[in-house]
Length: 624
Image (tube, rainbow, N blue to C red; front, side, top):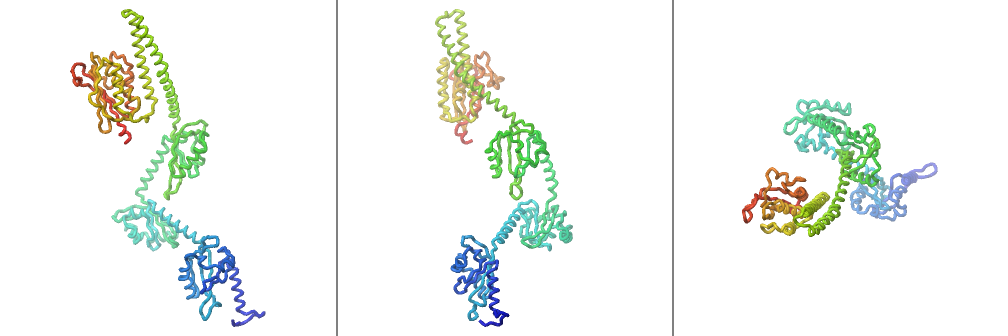
C-alpha cells in the first residue's frame, strides 16, 4: 500500500483512515458486518451486531449467512448482494433476521463495497449495516390496521362520508354515500363534491374550501343530487385531515330531512322511558350508573342525584352470593342478555323482589359501550306464590285426610250400618233411619272421592302428562260401571281406536264420572248408555250417549260449573266440574249436546244427552 503522506508523528493517512473506520465500526449503534463476496462468509462483526443477534463475535464469524436468513439467501443474492457488487452500494428494507434465541428481528440493510478489498478492480468485500426496524414496522402495521378499522367504522355510518383533496379529487366514499346517492363507488370517485351539489350550491365549493383552510373545519347546509335526480337536503361538516399520509378534506353529510323526525322520536323514546312503569337505569362498562328514570326512583327510594355516579351495589341486599354476580358479569361481558329474579334493598333498608333484565349496548363500531337494566318489582307476586305454595301444601294435607282418615271412617259407618240391617225390622222407623244413614254415608264416600280427585288435579303440574292408552282406559271404566250398575245397559257402538292420548291416571276419573252421570241421572226403567270413539287429524273424540231426560238448552252452558246439580240430583255437584277441569288440563275440550235416543234399538225413553270429549293424541302433542 502506498502512503501518500504522514502526520507529525509519522502516522500515514491510510492508517488514520483505518483508525477512524475502526472507531466507527466498533462504536456504531447499528449492527455492522463485513462480508466476503466470494465465500459469502462473515469476516468481521461489531459489538452492536453481536448484541442485536445474540451471538459472540467468534460465533457470528463461524455462521453461514443462511443461518441468519433461513430461506432468504436466493432473494438476498439477487436483490441485495448483486446490487452492491455492481453499483458499489445497495439497500433493502424488508429483511428478517433470526437471532440466536430464535427471535425474528425486522431490519433494513444498507451495504457498500470496501475499496481496500478490491482485487484487480473487482470488489471482494462489503460492509453491511443492519438497523432494527421491528418497532417501526409494528407501528406501521398498527396504523394500517387502525386505518382499516376506521374505514370499517365509516362504512357502518348512516351519514355520507367523502374524503377528497382540496382540488376536489375524490379519494374515498363510504357505503352510505353509494346507497343514498344511487351511484356506484367508481362513479362517485370520478365526481368532485362540487359536481354532487345542486346547481345553486355548486359555486359555493371553492369558498368553503378556503374557509376550511383558515378555520380548520366548516359546517354548512347544502343539497346533494342523486343519480335519480332527487335532491337531498344535508348538513355537511368539512375538516382538514390526512389520508394515507397526504393532506385531505373529510366531509360528512347528514340528511337533515330525517333529523327532525329522529329528534322527535328520541324525545318520545326518552319521555316513554322516563314515564315507564318499570325501573330503568343505564350504566357504563364499569357499572357506574349514568341514567335512571322516575320509576327507578320510586322503586328504590334513591333519587337520581343519589344514584348517578354510583354502582348498582347500592341496591345489594346481601341475599345473593359472589357466584350470582360473577355469573351476571360473565354473561354481560360475553355480549349476552342476563335475566333473573333478584332481591334488592331500597334506600330505607327494606327488601323487594325484582324481575331484572340487563342487556349490553353496542356502539357503531361494534364495541361494548354501556348496559341498560329494566327492573320490574314482583314482591306481591312472590308473596302470592308463597301463599299459593302454602295453600298447595294445605291442599295436599286435605287430600291425604280425604284419602285415608275420613274415607276410612265412612267405610266403617257403612260396614256397621249394613251389619245393623240384619237386626232391624224392615217396616220399622229404625229401618228407615238406617237406610238414610247408609245413603248419606254412600253420598259422603262419593263426595270424598270426587274431592280427592279434584285436589289431585289441582296439585298436579300442567306438564305432568304421558301417553295413555285410550281404549284400555275406556274399557276399564265401562266394566267398572257395569259392575256397579247392573240395572243399566252399557254398550260400545263400534271398536274403540287403539290410540294413545297425552294424559295421566286422572283420565280414568273423567270417564268414570261421565259414564256414571249418564246412568245415575237417567229416569228410564232401563238406563241405556252407548259409547263410541273416532280419531281424526291428531285428535280423538269420545261420545257418551244416554236415553235419559236430556238437558235443557238453558242449562247446557252451566252443567260444568262448580256445585251445579240437576233437579232431584243426589250427586255432589262436582263431578262434571271435575271432568271439565281434567280434560282442559290435558289440552282437550268437553261439551254437551242433545242425544239421538232413536239411535238405540228401541225408540223408548227420553230425548237423551251426548257428552263429547275431544283430546289431542300423544303423537300430535309430541309434534307441538
